[in-house]
Image 1 (spheres, rainbow, N blue to C red):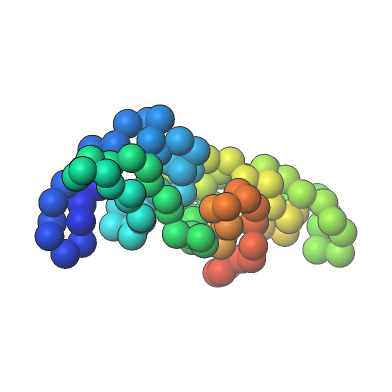
Image 2 (cartoon, rainbow, N blue to C red):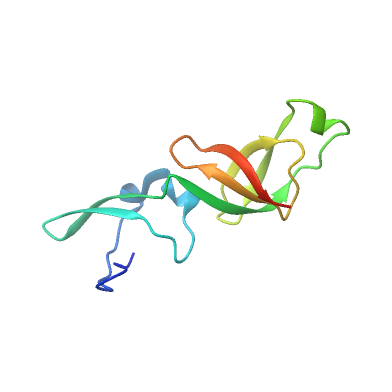
Length: 106
């Protein structure tokens, strides 16, 4: 991680990043908590936009039902989303809950 103003770089362990790896993309602004100049934790933005790279095909009628399916996004993480979501869509995901918020683009 690099400080956006001083360009100072910080290395965090997998334990410090925890489940936030699911949301991390290059250039993303995150909050890193420091103690005596050493990173303790990292928090991603509340909402992130991620590209769907893989998904199960939807069934007919998915637009009118509450059917959900798993998709894989550009970070390699999987999320449960409405059945109408397709590969190539960009999704807004809430990083606090890991839940789908909305489709940003087709």
